[in-house]
Length: 128
Image (tube, rainbow, N blue to C red; front, side):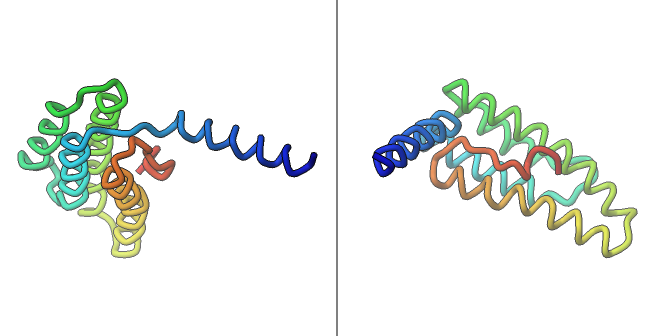
């Protein structure tokens, strides 16, 4: 009886996890992945046009409500990243390193989720 309770709990937990992360289309997954990498590499204090174009491409490829929500999250991350770029330009090396690590803890798992074609946004992306 105890084993069946464990199995039921595992099935319930897996169903909950499936509700939180949705599959994204191949075209959107690719363009959103490229947008994440463009944001991560953008070192300008105003945000580069190339990064904006990458996000706009992901926006154009978004077809589901999950994909549209993810694009809005990318736009927010981009704005936060621009602020961090400004902070980096004024901060001592130790603070710059901390900002880089905080962002990478968001961007790297997010890129991997998109590579796997899921809409899961890591908790580390809540505030970079």
